Image: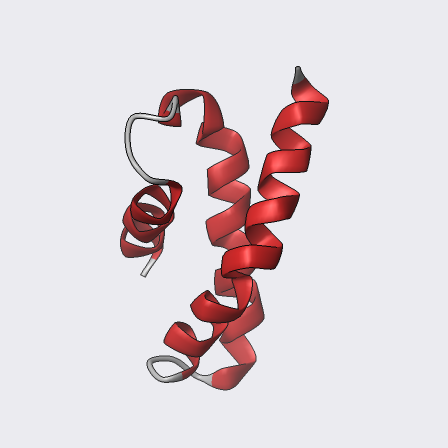
Length: 69
């Protein structure tokens, strides 16, 4: 089961990571962008069981970056 979560998060990093980088790049110091994106996906991995597919993953990722930012 744990590998499934890792695979899912790895997929979402590939799918949404660049969009998050673009978003953060326009709002924070460029040297902080990679760390912020990484933190979003760390939080996603930590909270993946809470997600439970209740909403679109994009909405959940958006909620996480709002908490971080």
